[in-house]
Length: 77
Image (cartoon, rainbow, N blue to C red; front, side, top):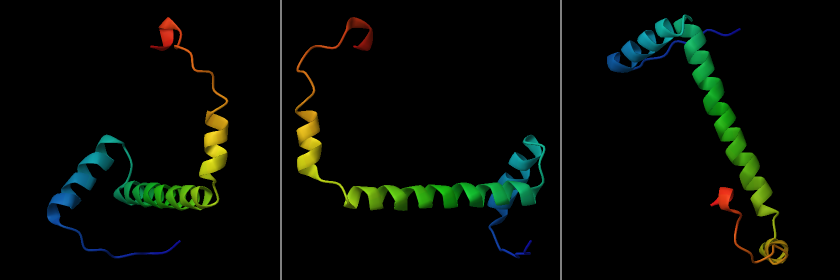
């Protein structure tokens, strides 16, 4: 495990302190969780961009053309 010293605005520190207390976790756990959440979001964005770059608009349109042109059932409106 690594130790990291960071500088954050007092208002942000107060919020972190408040939310970590509400969640009954340490500030370290709260920040580690927040960092993990951000990393996951960035990795997901990279993954989706990679997938999108290998996609084909023509193939997408071919699939969409197979969908019947009908009104949705009442519960789906």
